Every structure is written in structure tokens, then in C-alpha cells.
Image (tube, rainbow, N blue to C red; front, side, top):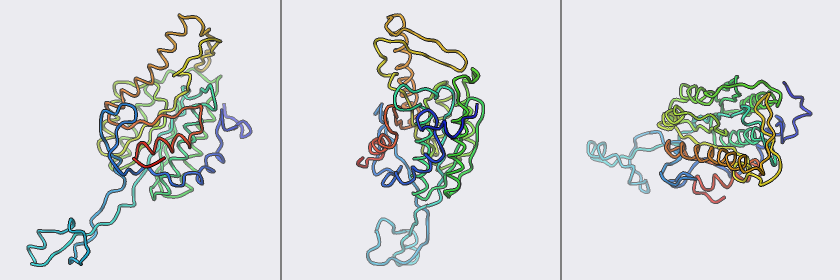
Length: 316
């Protein structure tokens, strides 16, 4: 059911104005690294955010002060004079944001719903990429629909991407149909694999519900020629299930109220929720995709600042 603008309180539903206003809050943030990084959780592999590469500009005579590492020895020997190769920084790079707005994201026990945190992270990432000179696009996907936004370098394109995220966000509703579409995440990754090509920055913003053995293969394929970052959104209840009280769990039309004081409820539910986080961490460790984790308990911007500090080797 479509939500009205008045229902967009910024905690259960996001608004387009809320996402567009985040442009002025990303100053000093960057996805480019200064040093090799390790996966934030596993620490078992090294990787690097490639950033924009260097493209060959021209071959010219050596001028005192030129970097000797750029000497072209073959040309220098051929002509009997020193020549250097000059390079310019590639500025035409695309950033693709895959933004999860499935029913599994329509939950939050603290500050806001996972779906709203994902929308905010998408906008923050889009503004960071635009300020770095990247073209920005992506996919906003729910359980049934996927909306594609082709990358361009413009504020209007970011507004179009944010609007697509908002449309998907506002389709979420507790009374919505119970949809069993377990392979939707893999389907989006396959679509991205066909669209990305080489040297893209791909940010996957999701709770990673419904991962399959195919997910690992797709992530590895994406990561082979692109920079891929996983932004996992989770609710603190997955790490610290309350000892007492009643918890309502919903999946579309079905709602179940459980007494978490009962041992036969508390232990398996806690193991299930925390186990899903471990499964995602293990999957991403094996795919060599760096993982950033975002709680619904805290404003996304502060968390993104800290996670980028760890990911890129820059101070937070």
C-alpha cells in the first residue's frame, strides 16, 4: 500500500526531502583508500579500494624534477634522450548502489527500521560518490520489483535514484502479501553483473536475508573486476535478545507473538538471529568483499564515518 508523505516520519518510512538533505553532511567522507585493508569483521584477507586508476596521457621529454619512476626506458634508449610517460587521473567512474527494500528490511526495535537506514545509507553513498566526480546510479529492489537507475554525474540523477528508493520504501507495509522470493538478492546481483562491466564501485546495502550458495559465486564475479562493498543493516535485537517480555515477529500477513522468557523460545531465536549475522560475515570473508555493519539503533552518518575510517585507513 502506498504511504502518504505525512507518514514519512524518517523512522518507519523515509522521505525524499530527508535523503536529498544529506548532501551537506558528507563533507570529508571518501571511499578511496590510502592503504591495504582487511575485512572489518574477519580480518583474514587483504584487499584495496581501487579508486580511479591512472590513464596514459602522453610521452614527452624528461624535465628536471620529473618522477624517475615514470621514465620510459625503451623510448629513451631508442632516441638517445630521456623520455617520461605522463598520466592523468581517471575521473569517469561509475558507482552503483543496490538498495534492499524487501519485507525483511521492514523491521526495527530501536531508532528506525532497517529499510530507512538502508535508504539513508544509499543517499549518503550517492552524495559521497558525486562529490568525488563519479557517475551515480543503481537499483532499488523489493520482493517483486526492481527499479534501475542508469549512472550519470548529476544531482538530478541522484534525486531520481533516491525517489526510486522512496517508492520501494513506501510499498512496504505490515499488511502486505507474504511473498516467498528467496532468490531476489541473487537476481539483483546477476543484473548488476551484466550492467557493471569493469572498474565500478558497487555498494550492496541490505540485511542479506536469503543468501544462497549462488550469492558467493556472484559476489566473487562482481569483485573480480570491480570494487564491491557490503553494507549490512541489522537490528540490535539480533545481538542481544531481551531476556523477558513478548516479541512480535511478522512476515507480511502472518504475525506471531512469542514469549522470549521461555527457554525453548529465547535460545533458538537468539541463535537464529545472531547466526544470520555470522553467516553473512563468513560468506563475505570467502568472497573477499569488505563488510561494513550498520545498526538501526544509531544514526547512519556517524556509523558510516567510523566504518569508512576503518575501511580506507583514514581517521574517522
